[in-house]
Image (cartoon, rainbow, N blue to C red; front, side):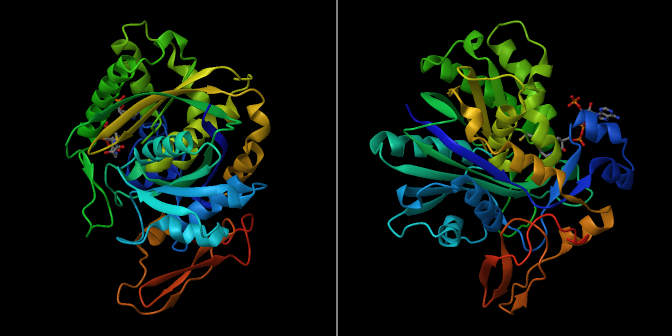
Length: 395
Ligand code: COA
């Protein structure tokens, strides 16, 4: 039995209210809150990037674990900070992980987290005494005033994969789908993603359909045996579309989509986190479902534009609730500072120098780790002097 032993997520201490964004853009707030299904959207201040967010998520995830047992760190991101150095190497250093660890980065848009999970499962299958730390972190950026703007967000998730899963066992049967399409991409010279939004929604659903058939052909569970579902959520109403499509493809009467509500709760508050989104949804499902889910089967669908999809499933472990970080996650989300739209726009426009000059960053609020500054093109990370809770009011 191999699966997830512990899991935790992190999102910056700043967010905007989607109603305020709708008002500023001259849009009916119901479009963002009902049509797209977002209430608030995380905003990363200049001293938070995928490395600092990942370190904050991973530190909480590893609490109480003997770090010498971590043998691999797989970091999935599509908004990495360096073309060469894996972001996980910074995290490895910040967390004091052993030098005998292997660290690498994985990329395939929002599917990276699922692909990293599958690589971790394979590693543990070969070396059952090892523990693999999987991290997925992203800052979703489409640009001010664009159609994609209400589907931005920022966050990181970290989980440990081992042969002693205490939260969810992941079954080996998996369905994959790959097709070379340009529904979403970000050339190396661009800060914001380019997207053909409507096409990306169609490709997501087409990938889901193909993954389901591939999953069934791989000996996966029949749909009636799946009790719960978690879908990649570029925006939360995408999960409703996915759920309806999946049951239609499986030729089974479409159930009430309200059953998805617990798996959407955190994502409604954070927004899109690309590779982390599916696993933040899994945290939400496990932590916000009022009944004990032990023994239940969960179907998971990851989609990464470009595109790759994957459908797989797992079984929730007895006493899983004792190993979740529900209070910490609720506290993180409840204590965020809501920015005005002009503060958000100013934060969005800020850039680090790209000429090698030194910049020491003012400290925002947030988890223990942040980006202290940059010098000679080198990013410098460290611990904050103050942690989440205080309200600076400005990102
Ligand atoms: N009240 C309630 N719902 C409303 C509304 C209102 N006043 N106005 C619009 N809506 C609904 C629309 O009917 C639509 O729902 P539907 O898809 O179920 O029909 C939804 O809100 C979005 O409206 P739409 O006009 O399609 O929005 P858009 O053209 O601005 O684009 C995205 C939406 C998601 C395509 C765009 O935000 C985007 O490109 N995002 C980034 C890419 C992405 O997330 N892709 C997902 C797959 S990876």
